[in-house]
Length: 113
Image (cartoon, rainbow, N blue to C red; front, side, top):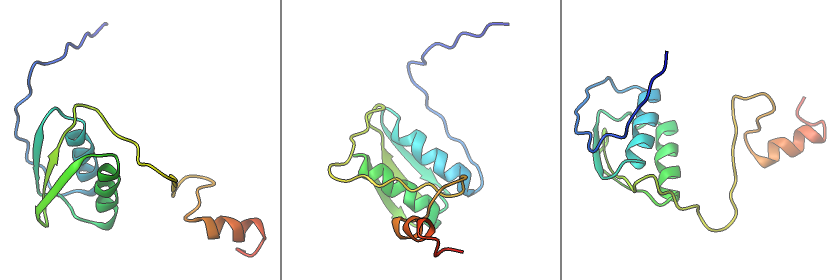
């Protein structure tokens, strides 16, 4: 079976889902890659989700938060601008992932056990 997907000229939809962390992350990212302004109602403003919002802001996406559970994301047509300066990537929850540089150094020195 073969599927072919063509680009839609415009998607104008309203979707209501519960305030879930996974959905909130994905909605913010998809909105940032969109071709215009998206308003997300029911956004879960957890610490993790706000890290995603701040990462998108660092990539040049304008995001307003008029209410705790509302985000207004101004999509930039899939254009992300890398931040200037040093970039630190934190990987948690994966084998070998470190929470921070100090933890990694302590583990290398054998002080973590």
